[in-house]
Length: 313
Image 1: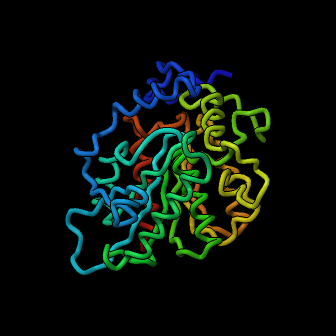
Image 2: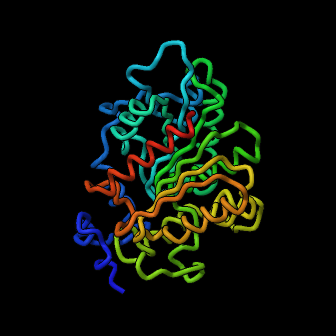
Image 3: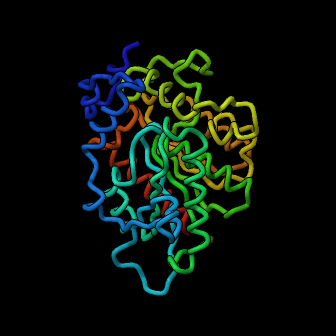
């Protein structure tokens, strides 16, 4: 089945992509190539913060985005953001302009987490860093001017998977009540792209993010973890048996995205467990379509912004 025939003509750029060979040997070059498109830490618009105050133990690096013209003396809603990159690459600066513009448009404070990357730091390192950042926001909410009752979690791709896992962790630990969860084509199921996948959809395996890359990244994240304890939903949220008590959730994904099946299945599981869920499937587009100009990208950006506004009320 030819996915190119289903591709929205505005996104034909995806037909020109040459798949990368994802291995431990090639990962440093992939990181350098992708990272060359990021803003430098010096040029980024957000303010750098650390979760600890002492130079000896700085904790987790964060980048803080505030609205340029926020009302004085009024606590603002906040959004903890986890970047994409397959768990193995990326940093907050990769989405710097997007996050700064989003903070201004939605009048929210955004805290973007520079979490540790696999394979150097396998599960649960990235999740721990997200939890540390969320705890930092809770402890410093008054100083930061945050409304502790309006804290959202958001992520793209691998960051969406981490966001879902962090929402489950926050629910189970009682750390903080999350007001909303925003997942943009989240990476939720470690089985996708393997022979163990619940479904192998032929239309979602051909463009942009492919099964081989997906499996490589999940293996990097897994490390030596044996999937044999109660942390399984925190590693691969698609395996969670009980999503009861999670916050209202927004999920969006392209119909040609490798993650289509797992994202739709997660939305259905949320609904069955009594969680308010909004799901958007955009026709004719693959993974990361919103990084390219087109009507569906604009629609996706509007839908995400509307979800954030709704959760912040």
